[in-house]
Length: 495
Image 1 (cartoon, rainbow, N blue to C red):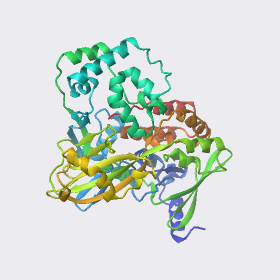
Image 2 (cartoon, one colour):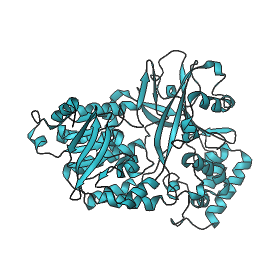
Image 3 (tube, helix red, strand yellow):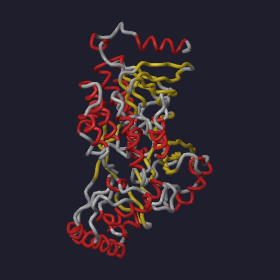
Image 4 (cartoon, rainbow, N blue to C red):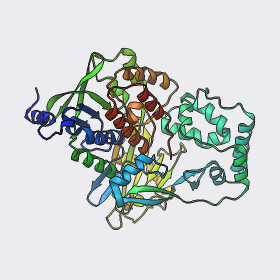
């Protein structure tokens, strides 16, 4: 039985007093997960169906990984986020509409450290080779050209990341960068990583073009990105406002209980909120949560092959350590990248370099250190002080911290499902799950979690827009939706 608070919520959800006739004849749509994909879909659907749209979120906030926290005069994101100029046009148009003059154009000054040297990030292969010095340039360039000119072509059938990347870049460059990068991001031997992990991330010029660029000097072009003045979470905040103003119902702090099906369709969603259990009849369900969680919610239960495959799909998380410093700035660059395995961190960012509004306290700044790890492992479980002690010598060596005395405060945040681990069996496991989910005509999984994607923010927004557009003009899935959803699997990550 639902308690009084829950009954009032259900009364609100079923109240048709203020609905238009279009809303009264509309579909009851439940969106699970208020990250950017879920928020975008819910916001656009609420414009058509108003209070018929219910958005459920486990956390007390929206935005998922793209959330900005504020404490007094200090704000910070979950790590490093930016809006690339190559953002999908519809997504960038939506953000411009939401943020207006608060969307700033910033010069990108990211740096990659390799072999004790910094180079521009993201580098193309020529910048990469030149940054390593003459000896490494000659060895790496010769290895790359020999591999591309004389080795077997990548036929798209190579099973492993290591084989694929060695064929594409040569062994010298692979050993210097792509192998340690893969170890750090995925946490497993690159020989056991699927080639899919490389094909969504690396684009290389033709060998003769690279040889020419190595010989002839090339002017370094400035790179830019967009960023909201008050932090990346402003996008989610504005989407949430638009959703609520359109009549959409948002519940945070929700614990999902089950997704009940009947006659092969989603029939209702059951969850706990404010101490009570609520059951919502559902015409359309849009989940964005990780597949492992999603597959275990169905009643009747998913086939055992589906639940076993979902358990086999693994995610790599991040432990964020925020170091508050008594100084104006740490770095000249907004983000530093550290692919080498000698460093436990993969990336560092300084929020103040993204926007001056992020750190409004005079003489203060924050360094955000990202440590890739698995839920429950040593680095996931480390306390703030222990992790700082583990990092301190490296931070001093890299001239990011002068002394421990300038540290004002440290604190941690965690995200459990950041990088999908594309091991060799992942594709087979994913296909088993996807066939089951795709057989349910009123179920539309989107987003990084429910599609096991390594994607960018604009991909999340695009999926939300496309799902909403399709649902407004259709009801059940059909071949047209299958074609749309298939394009999501080809998203390439932009650094």
